[in-house]
Image (cartoon, rainbow, N blue to C red; front, side, top):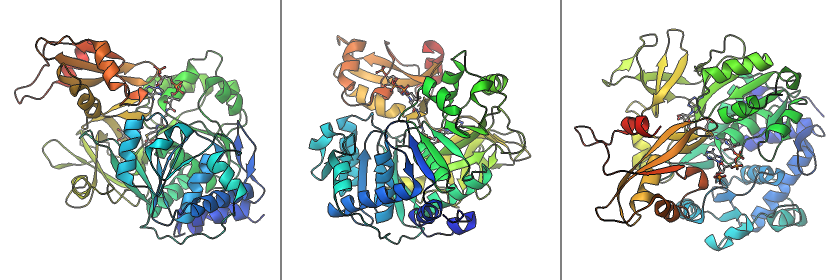
Length: 504
Ligand code: MCA
Ligand code: AMP
């Protein structure tokens, strides 16, 4: 085993997999993944398993630039499948395991993949499909283990696509964020440095691996620094507490932290080896931050990001982590505020505005959507986040709201427009408005306010029954209120703030 390559050398690699291969070679027998289910994998073992999955994909005709849509449970095999796509230069397209056939059907039609890897029951959705199998003896797993491994790495450049991650849009139609090799490499190198990752770290991984947070931020910080991943197949308070005792870093969404605090026995004694708790994907309440510090002596480091840019800002590793703020722009990222009047607001002016960002982490655009891609950027090339923020004189950013109509529940993004369109198509519905209301566990939850057509015999249950097959469970309204009309302003726009007051 040689020493782990220096960060600048990794950051200068042409592709994510080229960087990973260097680390894997250097770390050899050092542990890469210690899963709660299945066998431990060293770096050499993970590299070998990845080569086997790359062989299986190549045998099925997957080549560079082609999309591989993946909707599988979290497992060591799923990590190897992701890396195998990178080795082959294929474009990895992860999907939330909660998506329904209807939702998956849309993504398959949009991404036009060379291969769809899925749980057995989804086989009918796409001709070129491969069941993943739940263990090494089944499906694509078995093909990987039984076939010829592939050792070669397809050369890729920094502008080449590494992944497409779908993010719902305010139009109701999901858009595929085109994430390049350069996006991934620059963000990983910046975060490893900023958050002081080293081969001595043991990252407790409890996040799903179909979103940027668990897939890129967590996996890349650990794997490109030669650290060990304590790999959990899902989040569970008791298991997390048990494994914190061997971990040094945890990345979570606010729901993870509030659930840990919900266990009265959780506290300082669980965190003896921990050096860093990171939170993101949704706002962390200042009160959660304070309570966590009171119970554990650790100040959670909150950061802010989005699918289109990976991580954007972070509270400092050394220096004050201020509750209710998301810290400073990452060293290679620039942020600025555009106020209501369309002018740029100076940091420290106290103005609230929409945050605009620029940097090597920002995607070039959305998959096959040139118009939406152009609209996502200002004329001078800054990406418009849709998040409302303030920036103080020192450059510290606080997210204070959203210009985009978005609900975040348990770290999952839910676009009301998508649910409203499904509800509006239900017979007997005239119109609807979907709002987010405070929820003690998920931060926000979905409520639908529905206006029946005159004379229609509509019930909330009928609405739910009609939309259930179409929308993933986490998007389902937890309450449906029938009302005679929706409150509107003088411009005819539905006043969602009014509805939130009434039904929150
Ligand atoms: C599960 N349910 C949810 C959610 N998760 N409802 C709303 N929002 C959710 N997030 C529902 C299920 O449908 C089910 O409903 C019930 O809750 C229990 O489901 P279960 O699977 O047991 O829940 P869980 O395993 O306890 O999951 C909760 C969770 C999970 C651990 C908080 O949602 C999670 O892992 N969230 C992390 C999401 C994440 O990684 N986001 C990053 C994206 P019923 O019982 O009624 O059927 S954002 C991102 O990537 C950007 C770049 C960023 O900044 O990080
Ligand atoms: P996604 O589309 O899943 O990438 O979610 C990105 C969105 O999550 C951002 O545009 C923000 O609205 C929100 N978000 C992420 N991190 C934070 C945070 N720390 N505080 C507040 N909102 C956040």
